[in-house]
View 1 (cartoon, one colour):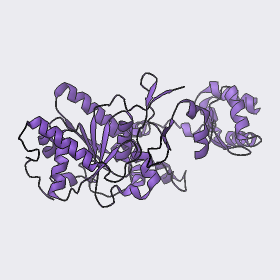
View 2 (tube, one colour):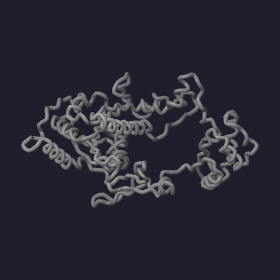
View 3 (tube, helix red, strand yellow):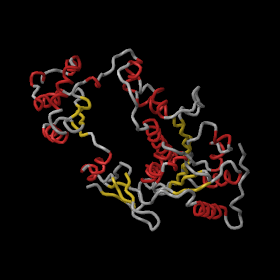
View 4 (cartoon, one colour):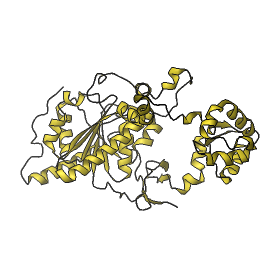
Length: 394
């Protein structure tokens, strides 16, 4: 069984991250960092905080293991407090529209003047420049721009798009990669960096295996037309088959389903007979239950998976054995809560969350007092920690 470290240690222990990013992408990126040991401080607006707080369970899933500070960045006091925080931080992640931080007088130039070692990551829909820079959008529009919905154009697909915000999550992953790379670079150069993270750019990158063939006038791989690859209905649920192009998986599938007459077909031959073969597979799979087929196909070495409900994911023996679900104990104010840890193992040990989602502004006094002490200590006795140059307004 996977070991779980709930002692607050991890590969990012000692790294301080200021997060001004709200909603989904930034919070997921800093969730990963917090689980890996970073001290993540949410910098939230005093009136309501992160808008995602109106969906408490959603917000909790992304923001446990962090601290919360409230600052009014439209006031000079709030901006100066943020600069003080930035002086002692390693990373500042923000998710405002491009240009907003500059208009507040908190652009990279100001922050790097305060702390040349600071790594700044800016997450936005289309990046810090380009013709779409100021276009408002959400995940679905980024998917469309990146070509991820191209099958809807040809008419091959209709209906609603999935609920998972792929663009948000992709940008969170790229932001995490960018921050870690910039921290590694800082260890060599001594200087921070400004990482520009575009949700759309990340999705275009993820589309490489489809875009590169098209850009060079070559056909797509067409794996989606492989009849052994897809979602099929059983007598009581759904399963997935994931025979991509491998004849060595197709043959045992045919043996199990009584389709030996087509077991010798190659990938291209199967694709040419897609409709016929899908119908035959579907007819046979509908005769038994989901769990029966998973057991039979698994034993035959055929790539298969049950389509789980969300409740079933929590009970899955593999998910449990890997230690993906962890408890944060009751703390006298909040009850025990179950969470999903970040997925990486380090020498067989999984860093995991240790604290509940913070109340809005719960740690404001604690964090600002600690920063004042640190700055005062750095300046020496008698030097006022508030001796900062004025920060411009918007």
